[in-house]
Image 1 (tube, helix red, strand yellow):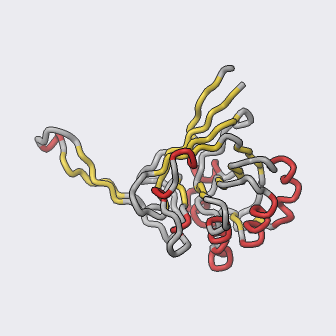
Image 2 (image 1 turned 120 degrees about the horizontal axis):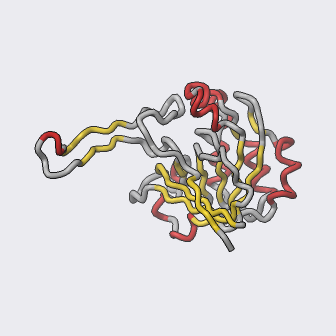
Length: 225
């Protein structure tokens, strides 16, 4: 059976669009061939929730699991399902947006929500950073109730929550990451603007820094004929 692989993450860069509260990454030469050093070495300054990244429970839950509390196999998803959910700027996902999708993804271990904002990311970074749609508490609870095998949720916007209404929607993170009996992860700012109808496996590789509440990630998808 033929297979191919695609990146479902964006390269982290100085131009990566981030939510308003997240500062940009900085790169500073530490050693430089141009300055007569024997090698190029660069110092990176970055917060854990920038670019394509993974949220662990400790992001919002005191004492919750950190990235390094997960086993390697927990970053591998063998039943991913892509769901298209075209919404407008600043629109909050509600349960009625999701009801018709239950039959399509009931067995999924990873649900990918494609709002259709890949082009916005490249064409209008400020709009992408501050006005994308996102989940609220009602829709997060709906996902937990109706997708019993789901242990991760990914999306093509910079935050799970609707940034314009962050005070009302931030707790969506707590509902997903704090569900008893599920070692849940959230994958944000994913590169889903591509043909993924043959997607059958996803591997998420966040930076493995002990104790971290999340981290930038390289995410790879496998396509099978």
